[in-house]
Length: 433
Image (cartoon, rainbow, N blue to C red; front, side, top):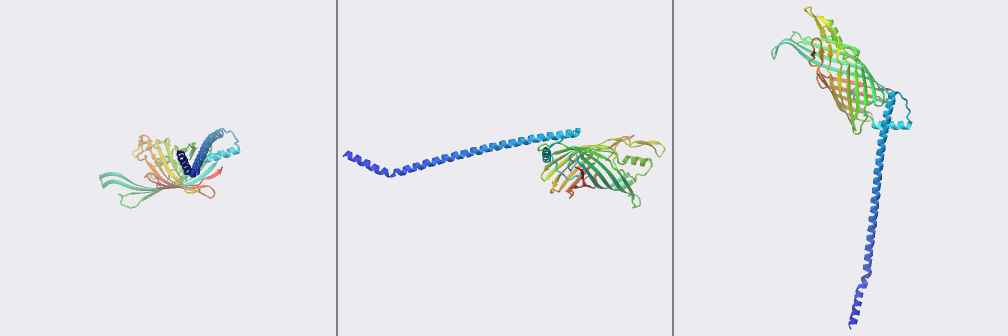
């Protein structure tokens, strides 16, 4: 009996298990397949990530190699430029391969190209002449100035009452300067300049003593027509450093070839002329030296620029002579040694490229002069000679169809000692290239 019950239980158990056996086996197989697919996908993703990392490292290595080659090329080009400048200065003739010369020119054009700005002065604007290029630049300048001055000589009793002479003077001054400037490129970084000018001046002075019983004015006209002071100049472009502005060193020397104002004044005193003379000077009467530095920092489309310099005017002996006063006594007259005031010069502004043919600039210049000293029988400083000359300048440049740039600069005086208005037109032409 017991054996029969055991057999029956086993049969029932097999009847319950056997129908679900294939289903359990199928689920286990699917789970294993999914795990194998996930492992395969993980392996493929890992391989792709490793491949991308390898390509990234290879790209970085290639970029580093290209940067190294660029630095080596820049160093080689620098040595080539220095060698060319040395050979050019020593007169040694060299033959550069055509391919190397082309690469050198392209490299210099990219690395050393100074932005071309409207030429607002002799040291600001324009670019240096390449080696062997001769450029002639004719220019015309017009300067206009009006000065009104009240002179009181006498005794002041009350603030509103004066006994003596009150003289009112008005001076209208017009000056035309025609000049011709020659520039020559000694090397690609060094430029020499020579400038000659012809000056035409006209002054009209109106004076009236308001204490006289008349409203009539005395008018005195004076003029000057002669060559001006000849100027010499050198400009050198320093090698540009990465992240630094372009730096150009300037050195200008002005001669005393024009008509000396002290000679005219001494001649007038010897001949016993009045305070007003009909002849005007066309030069300063002194040699001067002016070193300066020009800075240009391009940030497309604006280029910022500035200039700082010093004007040293060399003192000169303008002579003394004996004259006889009203009492018949001999007195020493003349100027003796004259030491004109030197000056600090500043200029800053910005140039804007309107398109590939024209540009516009705005700048401000300031010259601070020290006092003039006259060392004759009684050395003295000339009161009022320590002046400040300020000027706002608008410059415009457009390239003409022939390729020559048309430069126009308009200056407006901002201080009492500055001219009211000056307009300068420059058109440079290339003679030899």
